[in-house]
Image 1: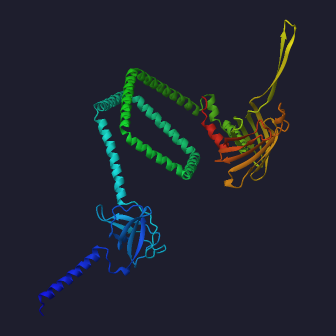
Image 2: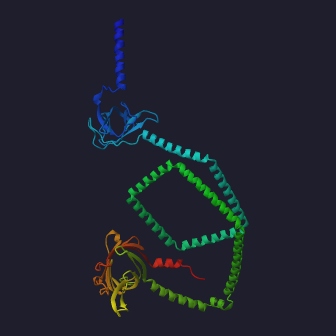
Length: 550
């Protein structure tokens, strides 16, 4: 079948038109299968580098394309077409990404199966994440900062004076190391003896740690509790810590801007260090003979100690052989049996004493209304029954004994031979005084204490109770004493009341607060303070640390 020229031209035009339509569909926004897509709008703060026609992907699979980018109400709205087989939730998150470092931008949607799907034409709630442009900008800022710092260092190190200072400092270090080496070589025996002594000390420390392993474990437990408390404080003050970090960032920025000044300060510091090392070198040279004399004295002392050790070994050898009175006593079975019997008696007595519980408390209070302090030292002894206790102590109080001074001034006129004036003055004074407590207490129920006896050298009663909440760390109490005060001021002649609240941070430490003497206007005041309690174990540990005499 033959085609004429007109038919061939018509076929060519039809094929070309179809090709143009296909390329328009692939490269443009024209879409012939529009019924298979639906449009949604995604809000952004910025869409730098994203263009119309860019791909829209979900989990790396292309599901649509960008149709339109427009500004609306201070934000950027990106209209995209999504294949209807893919549903996008209304709270989907979107990111602008790049295919490779220099590739085209595309829109990546978060792949999720939950959430309410968006309808055609709806707007999603999208949080714009950091893009590659943001990262490149951040890298660029870091590069600028590094460039500024290296430029400042280059200018500083290029200064001949700085190079001379550094070289001089290195020379001084070399001289110092040479002198120290010579000193060590000249006193090698002393150094060896010192190292041997250090070895003995470390062995002694090892034995001490082994004997007090339980106390070391308790100390580590306390450190763990402290770190937990620090962690809690950090979490509760997260905003303040963030503010501190922000201030550090501002400080580092200021330091970067003033890099040249910092380098100049560093040069001054190097010069000061140079001068200090020169002085140290001079001191070592001038006192070399004194150091050698000290070394000779140490060697002589070591020799005397060695001779004393030999004498002690000789004496102990004679005692072991039963020579002399002391040797006979040590090797006698009668003395051994007597000592064993005495030791058993002492052990029985100490066992009974150890059943008593002793607590020593130091308490300090600050009276805020009168700007005075009160201190208390008390010792509590609790018998084995633990249902009663005895307490004695001393109190340093700003409201001590009252005193009154009367002064009378007489004025005479010798010319008139008569009395001109007669003036009497009365001064009342209340000074710090040391009072004492002597109390008997009993515990009728768990967490409840009742006390009666002398409080600040006057009869009084008191009670305290541990609250069942907050891990039983809070104790409230009340005291009443001085029922018949002898005050010169009639307004301050009321019974002394005291209300306290103690918060126990640990068994040995607690905070205290309350109100003191509310019935007497001149002395009533809120107070706050701290207290430390030392138990039997604490006292034994402290007693073990006291150095004993020879």
